[in-house]
Length: 418
Image (cartoon, rainbow, N blue to C red; front, side, top):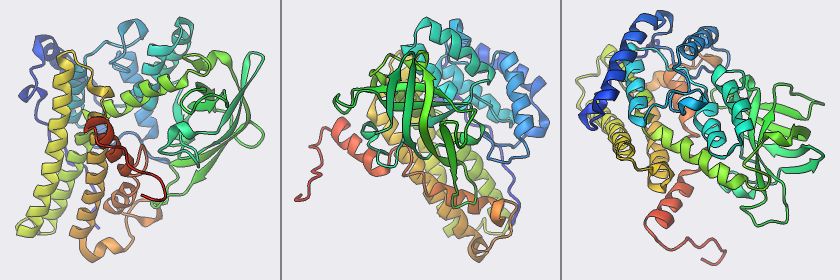
């Protein structure tokens, strides 16, 4: 199987659909000049985040420190909290310039895009002063403790409990699909602190230290082996884990409104950049097709045209969101943005994975690549894409959200006699 090399093509500039204004263009020139001087050539074509066991982990960590020292970390946060106060359009420009240079934009992941905004919006000044600098520096690396075995898409149905003892919260329960657990020092976690309150009340949003984990620590991760052979997820068992009440964001029993902020940023942020990685993989597959002498096959060209159309649809949807943001609107909390985006990229990823293996033919059925368990790049992409329509809210749930909250259709009957 041909060794995968990421093919970089500069994305069409944001200005083609959104006028960023002179200040944003000044930022483009400033950042392009800085990036051309500092971009590490050894990371060209390397993806972010790095999978478990990646040989580029140290180089990516060093590159993150360079970005942090230069003030290019958590750039959308307000300046008073350590960010640069960049607008969404300027962040999109920054992403374009990383793509143009062919090097990854190392970020603080969920800590930057979901935890930080939640702390900024709902935390006390003391909490902001403590948690935000540690996110920027990379001292605190977060994993997510939302989903439970009995509460996946129905997030408010969680049963993990938190009991107040003095100035601490004692947490007991189970979480699942904890991604990035292997490098995390903290978990942003939902626990039920008032079992007698209505379903969406009585929940608290807690920042739980997890650097010390294993039997007897109160926090134990049990890796879940995936189809690809990797263990990027884990089950999390909480058995009397203790955390200071200081780490409860938004106040006891007030966690659902903090969660809404977190989820809004999580899906809104992805909407403007979802197409970038898919465009890279598309051009890499085009090179694979050319190497196999299939570029002139009309059936193959038709399939590739389908893929590029989907990527462009994602790109223009992101630009539509940016235009709304540039006009002072806040569409990130609207279901038609988060839910439509989630359906679009997750279903495209599955279709593209199937397309890639179809183009490889019988070779796709045999191992022999450089990945774990001998998988090649396209085999790993195919297998990892299968879960995309499940995690983060299933495609079925997202369609119900669009139907009920956007289109105003009657709620689906969920009884036995429908």
